[in-house]
Length: 425
Image (cartoon, rainbow, N blue to C red; front, side, top):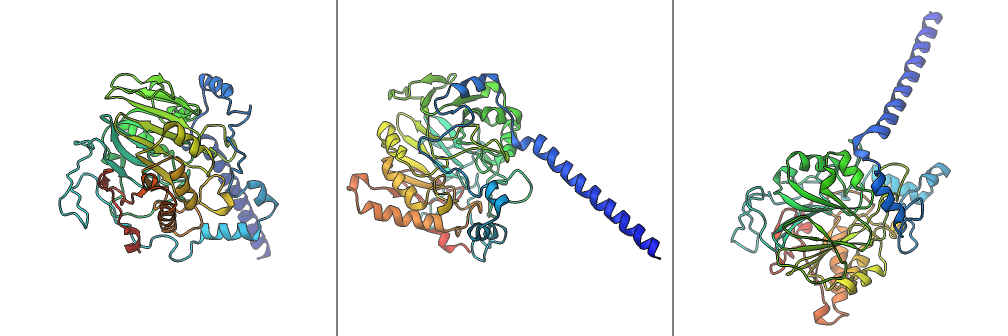
């Protein structure tokens, strides 16, 4: 009997060791070879990276000193503080009410739309009828679809988990979650950086498979990810900060970042700095660039913030390229601990004033649980901050806040301002 028990224990131990080995090897293989982690820059891109004045020989650096991490791996191995423990607890076990308990009401793309205040429906079939000039749609988080100079443009197209693994980063449920199949042909895709909530490898592969993209515009080093996921090399242009390109009906061409003249059918895109970091792997952060975008047409001037902490560079961008008709401003995933790389809502509002924005569209909220705050907190706080800021500036410097539902079409003449989040549970 004792011999039998010892034999069982022996085989249980062997099984447990084998299981640990299989898990370890599987994890190593996943981290090493999974496509979601992207690619490595080729020789041509490496030359450009090494020549960048924003590259210190090992990593890219921000224009101002920045603490660019949330929970450091070194901190965890050295022991977790009570503050860090509380942050981890809120991520793993969100308190009741922190996230929506029911699907958020959103618009179905491709169906007639009518707001509660407006009975006339707006007919939209994105796959067959493109957006009209000057129309915008927020698709959640940092994805905005809009049309300028006869071209359809999107920012950071993300439609799946904000995570490399099938755990964590799940989007909030919506009544009509946007899908890649809902999208029209997109002439211009602007990428701000390579974090998972901004660069969705499944969405990129779907866009290419469905032949929905004309050209990608990305920070230095990000091209390698796109190419690994099936994007042809010729469909990607990489940018350093303050590099510009003019996009007309013909092939995109290099342009001066300061030239303000534009043909009627042309866009100018300028890649501008943000205060953030990059990386899709456990190690190797800041080896690809990050930033924001200026999009100029003869009729409208648009700014997309990407991610970042507050700095004086917003005022510099406003002086060089403003005023902006609309600014898509990061407003979410913040915490005092990492405000260097994610602005607080009050700072997002101030950045809007610095940019000389006429309209601010809060983005980066309402889709993922990426921090410790309540899901409604970002839009509530920026709304209060903009209202307060408007009392301190002249009327011609005041900001209007656009608060559309996901999938809602709007123009700058008819801004959505309903506080719809207050009716969601």
